[in-house]
Image 1 (cartoon, rainbow, N blue to C red):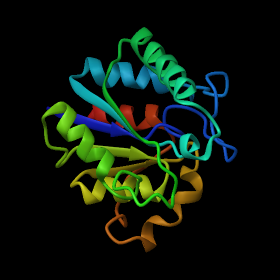
Image 2 (image 1 turned 90 degrees about the vertical axis):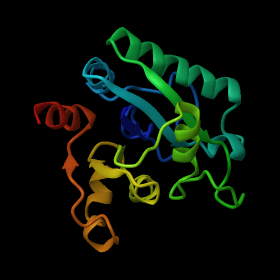
Image 3 (image 1 turned 90 degrees about the horizontal axis):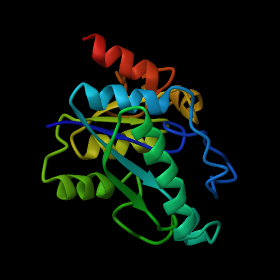
Length: 181
């Protein structure tokens, strides 16, 4: 199985320092749904691993999150794509869970749900913690500059294991590069 794991906010949709709290605030990044479609049509299995502490903080409800994910799924499907699994951490930063990135728990949930190993899979994110979670699970990290990625790019050289991480403007550029090889 050719697995690609994507962070959500900042990779698939616009991110917000005030949290993405509703389906109306869930705004796709231009070209992201089409990139998911292209990856799927090229034989990749695509999963999402996303921290959603807004649930624990009371910023939005499970119904709100489900509506955001339904929109994300519908846009990907309209572009010929499909998500094999969506794993999310509902916990706050002080909840002492094993699934909040940079810990690899979400990736392990994906492995279990898909009955596969994430070893060697791509982990595409816009933050250092996304990439650290991927590294901890044996994934190959890729940073996108969309979302918080432009701010994260300068931290790559000072973060162990991420010094040679490839950087792309967005998911569409990552997809162009991957499918060109």
